[in-house]
Length: 325
Ligand SMILES: Cc1cc2nc3c(=O)[nH]c(=O)nc-3n(C[C@H](O)[C@H](O)[C@H](O)COP(=O)(O)OP(=O)(O)OC[C@H]3O[C@@H](n4cnc5c(N)ncnc54)[C@H](O)[C@@H]3O)c2cc1C
Image 1 (cartoon, protein in one colour):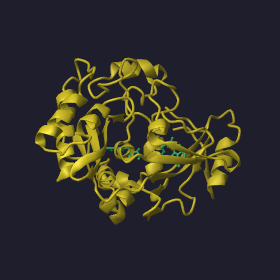
Image 2 (spheres, rainbow, N blue to C red; image 1 turned 180 degrees about the horizontal axis):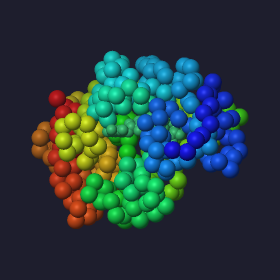
Image 3 (cartoon, helix red, strand yellow; image 1 turned 45 degrees about the vertical axis):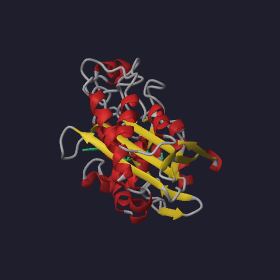
Image 4 (cartoon, rainbow, N blue to C red; image 1 turned 135 degrees about the vertical axis):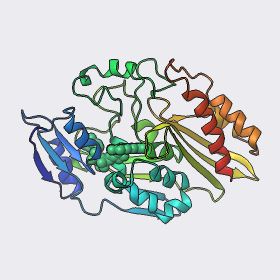
């Protein structure tokens, strides 16, 4: 790993100023939260910063707050372990607690922050290799065993965050601060960019912006939710797919539904055809199976990853049923 300068940011404004300063000939200036993804990329030589801005030195950016009127707010430096163990999140946003609990390993979850998790780079083996990095799109086409089965004409590469699947199902937004304290609120679905959009970034975050927190709207008392991450093996693993289901009921019928699948498309994907099937109906095994069946229509798997299609269908069916249990 090349040498670099380390600076502890003392506030969000300080971090924004440091990130926005002109990068020297030595390379770019990058932010670091838990460092799990960034240090990996630095070790691979994929990112060669001249300066690393440590965000973890910012005090008070690691809180979870809930308000009946405003909903849930999760600061960017909150770790996945904090989300997993928050009683408020377990009780009210069950699918998110489950998504955090099933991400990575306990050691990683203790260090990894939710902000860094949403901003991590794709897990494509070729992309994360210094030798192949320059050919990002080509790499994305090659790697297909675990790759996208929807919207994959240009690339098979996918966003890596599994908590994003649950956050999108809960209709979360991210909040960022840039130069002169300018803040933006972006719906998570608009924040995440497909990997073929811009080879250097996976989100709409600007180079000198800091993600400060994530907000999730309040839920009706009748909300039911579930999350499932399907892996090849039972110990920690990246998903074949993961699914979050959030249903609002009225008189036992589905009044609103958000179903999101991760690791099946370049960005977590709303399964809107399934949502349409559920709306206005009481859910039983037959309805759940019908919604799962329509979800996989239009999938465009490759020869190597067609096995993901029936798995996704099964996981959607089971997760809808789990939400109702
Ligand atoms: C063995 C293993 C298994 C894993 N399994 C999973 C899994 O199942 N699901 C999953 O989702 N992830 C998984 N991961 C990935 C891991 O969760 C992420 O690498 C981690 O969450 C990144 O968070 P971080 O705080 O360490 O980010 P960092 O590495 O510090 O930062 C990541 C990126 O975000 C930027 N950044 C971070 N915070 C901010 C901020 N507040 N504002 C602006 N920019 C910022 C950094 O500049 C960097 O580009 C796994 C990792 C390992 C090693």
